[in-house]
Image (cartoon, rainbow over all chains, first blue to last red; front, side):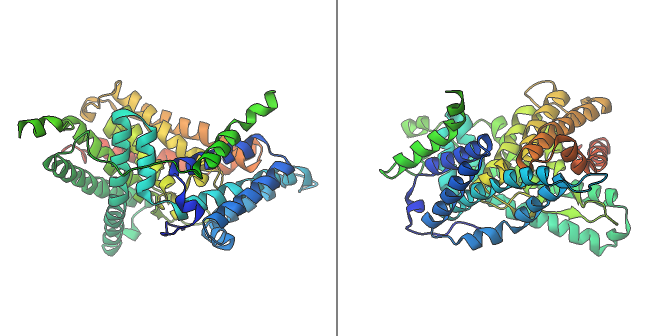
Length: 237
Length: 194
């Protein structure tokens, strides 16, 4: 999977809020306008976005290869019929056109992942969601990022332990129950320790945040994101 | 010194407790999404992902359960590979392989399960909740997941709704089995210390 790499590209310099809005806007726009001109423009925009993050389109295709593989099945499934003629071209083509619009959205998403450290997304969430809810979401995001590998390690360790004790011979639901119970126990024990640690460190509603500021380059990106998000309303005019 | 102390607005103990549980349930949901048990034959693998939603609703109630699943989605959007097959990104959630609706469905489902089981924002002791109520809560969550996920899949991939439903149909009996396992875990007293 693609992940953040430090850099000085155009995409790196943008504020995470404008980048998130542009991703959302593009997804709204391609869903609202499944036409060929919109698709072509969106694909061009997706390629520009990965170029702005100095990311190879091939690397994006490689990292989302499972997703693209599953998506490629959709037109085949859509075209299949249960009796003669067994395969109809029209629904398959329609599905292929709808599936093609996913590609630019994933390209822009990949550019975001490559150019945005997690702490910037966290700061963006905390700025956008007001009050205590935003603060808890921000701190929570940071903690989940930190604890995910730890808990994943726990779950894999328990799975290996069950396997080492001949668990493979048990029925799947029993293995699932054992795995979930042990994982939950460890997870809740970690939660208790995290709670003590947070209180010991004066977990407060008013800590200091990293600074975020819109630069000049952000305004056109923000405007584009807004315009794309509102583009379905064009049809109403 | 008293002035400095007064400027720190500490988070309350009860909030810290719910918050850390939600954080860890989010991390557990992410971890369980990476692990599945292979089933014999042509059956789809037995994914453990729905347990995250079930226990978010059962243990944390609608507010903190929903918060836990929101954290799970946010971390994935921020770029941590927490979705199944190690995927990440806002694009994956919104369109992805068409399964983004199930991820959003898990969030809404945890709120629904929590609301049915706990009948309020504050989570109550699970020993006081009868088995039928637990089953109804988790079943309602599954209904919500499919009600959001299947039309979403159909919209993204262009499959007609009945075909999209047929694609997801093999997962329904497995999800019902997972529901049974979750209730058995609660009733087996494995979480009694909590």
